[in-house]
Length: 180
Image (cartoon, rainbow, N blue to C red; front, top):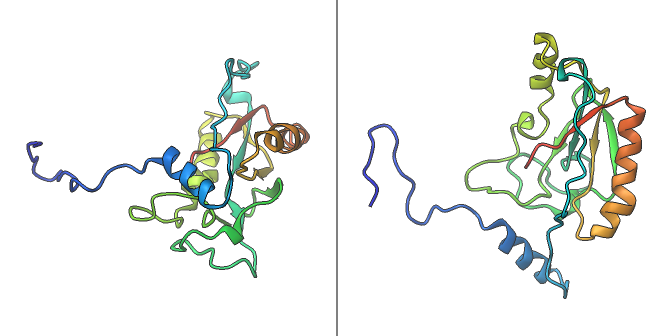
């Protein structure tokens, strides 16, 4: 039994992290997929070292959050899981003004958080401060959204090339995908 520390109470024994991988497999199985979900993992990571200092580089945000749209069910911060609000295709939206996005379609621990803090999945204000302080050179003019797909093929053959083309169009040298 852990020793209690005043001001830092331990969580109840039943309050454990969500088993994301097992939960995802169960979810896809319940949706009728017969092949168990497999996470993409590469033998070699296709990242490239920076060609110039971060302070002179342009950073773009990529997100799995979706634009809030009428007729797609409850997309409010406290919404239960809402597959209607899921992305079906890659999109780009201006960073200014900050777009209204929702994560109601994604699986996350709704017992301990909600989707109300857009800065958690769209940290544009933090990046703007990093530009002002000189830590990064610029924020690309658009935020880019990408669907979460069951298909690795669609991700690699369709969504990935579309995102890459859009990032190049924006002059982005670095892409940041905040984890949700």
